[in-house]
Image (tube, rainbow, N blue to C red; front, side, top):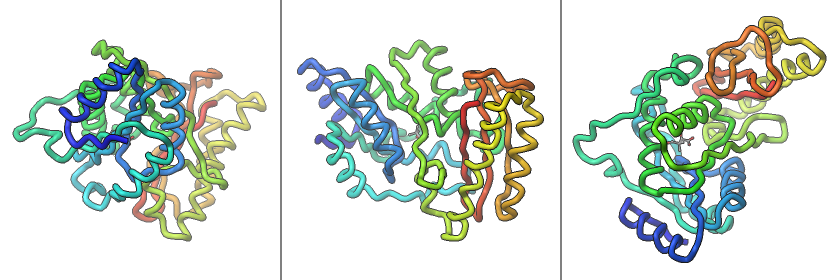
Length: 279
Ligand code: PAF
């Protein structure tokens, strides 16, 4: 496994793989890898013959009061996990990935505006910018993103379409803990009592899903049912719950099977959690 510490090293490693006839699959991450990331790696290995994992805690997607400095960075452990999953190249640039006097940003103006975009101003500008930099540095055939970050995925798909980025974006299903909690590097921030409470999030989403299966399609009815369930867990502080079209992120009044998603964000203690399921 090659560990590339800058763009030049990454390009050398990718060129060698291409020369050997390989196709390139990129899994962008911020490290602190868990089983959800490893499922993305497994998918990348099915989609391409050389798997690149990027590990970069991207400062530009964190707000001033967010957890950039305390974001866990267990790099050695991440390398061990990648090695165990037969990753070919780790791309772990330093802070100079953004050169001095960096001043170029990618703003997606539609898909990124509601949901998390409303509560995390500048977040998707940071995500779109770093993802475009990663795609330009690696030139993969395919890049893998988890469906757990629903809006991030939609923003990246829109950016790739609008800017004619020559890459295929593949969406991977959300990996869940045994009690239904969506896997996330931030779950490790949860105090044990909040970790136990966190199951309410996926339970509320599944309640809405079950109502759709039973024939209900009014978003207001589904949202009321899910909100009631979330309210049973008084420690959970809801930020938003909404039903949107998965591509545009626009709220819908009526569910369209296969196109509508129910998405939620909220806090347990200081930890912000997001989740979504297809309806
Ligand atoms: O999903 C993440 O881990 C990050 O937002 C990403 C896509 C690696 C960009 O920093």
